[in-house]
Length: 354
Image 1: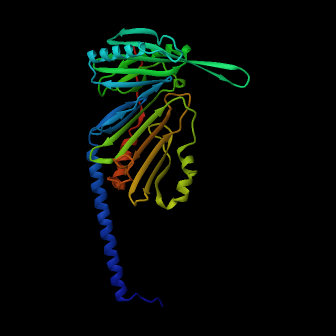
Image 2: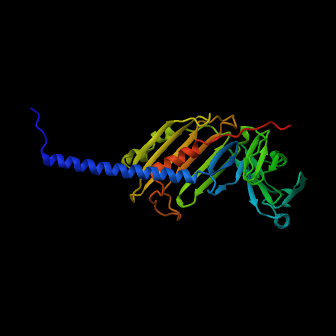
Image 3: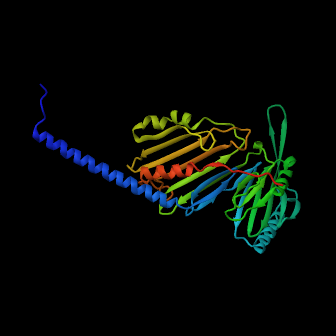
């Protein structure tokens, strides 16, 4: 005969059930509230053009572009500079270059080319010749590099194209890139094929070997501990995949009890193959934070399958160097925000120019 539990034990079970139900109810209500909060934050979205790709972010989120990079040349964008301010800066830069010798002890400025086309004005400076010699065990070799700078301006936006120690046989790359530049209106999504960055696009033809790259970051009002990073780089040899690196992470193996995988596996986003890793982490100061990642499975020879990295992190201390802080977004809210943003990633549709 099976012994029935006593009335006292039954009362304990009922009490535990009530506590568990109450906790579940609170969690469910909190989860629903968080999802409503995220729905409000993502009610209005902005589309951002990053390289060959588009991504949707909350309209209220400020987006920062780092300098773009293509064919060994950095491209920086300056908004709000008037034509007079640009010309004054250009004249100052030219004077500074002419005022000092190069490292070879000869005249610093080697050429100045004026730019004036389609509303663009500016100049290209070739200067800073630097020759370095070295011995490889059999013969002495010499390497010469030049500094190249292209400064252009149109409609309140300036672009600086710069590189140092550039191969003298390839300095023509700079003028070609500037010829392919078209400034973009604020928030404009271009329709022509090409590589876009902050307020500009380098129109095709471009190839993966030119290694176009651009990075953005976004922040979220009311959540200073939350940040998103997005990077796209073409022409790189594929490195080990996200999940392969995670499997070999010695720190995670040692402190496995601090990491909880919420989702991990292959995930294609709008036809772009990739891998996803979503984790909850308890930091050494007991703060609970979230780290979500997605990386593409790239093709070195295709500008449309670049090496893409999308990261969404919470619990970052707004004070540089400070310890992690408790995530201001709950797990449900973090997952909802991640799914909303990551699912919007897609290759920018284009129309061939007439």
